[in-house]
Length: 143
Image (tube, rainbow, N blue to C red; front, side, top):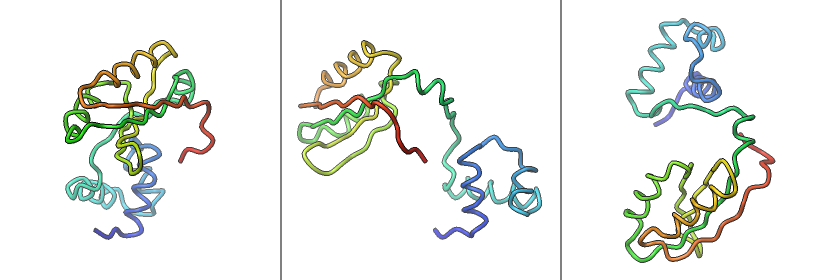
């Protein structure tokens, strides 16, 4: 689906602050409030906007210990392992990747010891053959 320039601008603004009032969105876009509301409703209906979430503060995020966990799977285990990983709240993101590993999980925990427990839990999932973890020391660019 192709999007109009104003739709792209709207999505960009909403990605920064999804709670911005419609009237303020309208002013920023140079559109009427009703036009912006109609655009949002259409983007939701068309599945472009799939939902809204919470973005944690930088101060809170800085207190978490994060890691990339590279995961090798047994044959035909992707569905089961994906569901088990979905159930672990500390798994923030899960990517399918090419190469010698099948998945990369981004994990965040309150401490090193909690991170260690999460990584152990991932390794114990039926269908996980091997993991390799790298603790994230700092984030240099985040868009």
